[in-house]
Length: 446
Image (cartoon, rainbow, N blue to C red; front, side):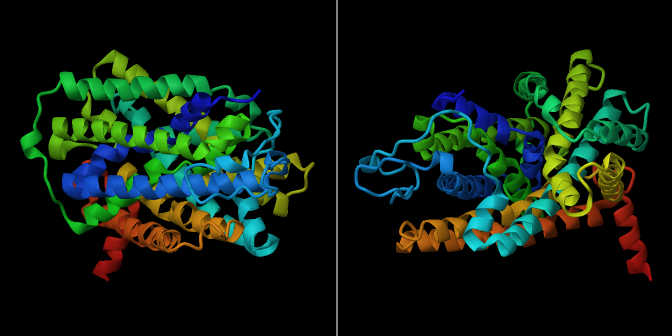
């Protein structure tokens, strides 16, 4: 069944709105509200443009979405306007709702050739997914431990969670977990609403403690957090699969509208929480709320369940690549063993980073910056050369790749690692001290 423009927009909102939003007020605290506001607008603009580009590439690539009638005699999906297809061509699409999902890997393979494109895409995709999974691990351990009022250590919880994740990831198909999305949406909206309500109405404002500027390393970290929060390009491709022909033709306008709405929502949420808690704002904003409130703790547990069921869906492409290369299709034992090993590597990553949810969100944004800001402009330029010949398009693509991709990678990694390794046990979200901090401290002593 095809989805209308409204349904597509709502689905994209659901895709972008993830746990990374919980760290956005922390990004304001780290950078100061002036640099953070600039970064919000910068990341919003770049991510909106590249999300439109990657969706246009997918429409061109999927043959079942390719126009079979064009009044001007051409079958190109390109147009001079990134936000909409040329209405003069009156493109007509198949509308049977049975299209296959076009992936980033397939788009790169089309643009660069099968071998080079696949290597390029996977080299950007797999590390990004692994860091996201590490971030989920940290959230699961810390958030669940707080839900039990700290009576169970996050390390013990993480070990138990890892065993559960091994069971959830064991089946070859993740189809059953897709139906948990409704529960996840309710849990997320409830958590988001409770945090915003408490910040606005149940906590005296300490806006005078808000800092306009912080250190440059905090701005770097905030950059990575915001890249992580606005990035949902692969999810947008999945949403595009069930879109109606009208929604596909207007996908640029839909994405622009959705991203603008999310920019306003994220700014309201981030400034409200930062104004309420000032420099005490935590990376997991639930930590700023009362720990004895039963409703808040219940929502915490629901958020934990949401993330736990999202983990297998996030790692599914990672598993698929490994298994297609090294595991026989019928070898169930090897498949389960390889998946369990990968899951335990994310546990090790979470343990090394300690309780560093905010910094690891920044690392996730940095590692994913190439996937989000470099690959889409390049692929779009190759697949739509006529659209990218103009001076404005060339400069926009170049600056997006340099500032968003290369800059995002370097600055976010620098800011994230600096926060993990420099603050140690004095950092409010790093107690006890992260093992990675301890290792680097010992290295400096010797």
